[in-house]
Image (cartoon, rainbow over the protein chains, first blue to last red):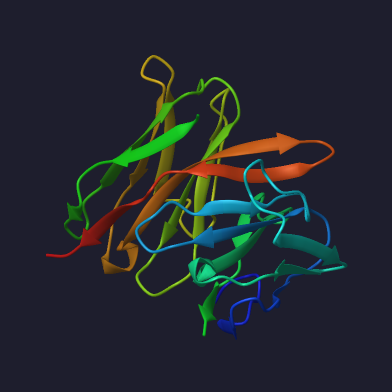
Length: 110
Length: 121
């Protein structure tokens, strides 16, 4: 059971916009910035969003993040087949003094 | 470009100690924080623990009694030891660099590719 709650799956057709939600509590998302990662099997998870909405250099603006209260969202616009991957949210937890993660959302591009 | 690479045995027997090393290139281990994260087969990511550039550590309470993370500045790497392993410790183990900023918060980047450790007798 993951501390942060994500839907297990999401899907969309090429060109569409999809949103993935992440729900937490006051000790994690409510108090700290959210990270989003893209993960393909057998590869290193890739940071897509940090500080709730900031994109690292090299991450296209088709990926955007937002946060409100104890929930956060990742939006992917202009969906492409290569966006098919697992997406994870994460946040620092003040009670744990460590990281907590969502269970991951498997994105399928139909 | 900062890169992290995990290494260590891919198999461990129950009750033994799992030992992994993360070698860092392109950055000094004397800066930042360094974390271990694992992913059991078919499950989500689980934070194992971190070590700071000064050697201070914190571990996931669920693993705390069995985990030790150490830093080797001479080799620019950090290591994980997990004792008394069981089948439940079978997972892909990742290392990652953690950046902490007062205004922008914390983030994990980059990560290593991960290494699968299987516990079986």
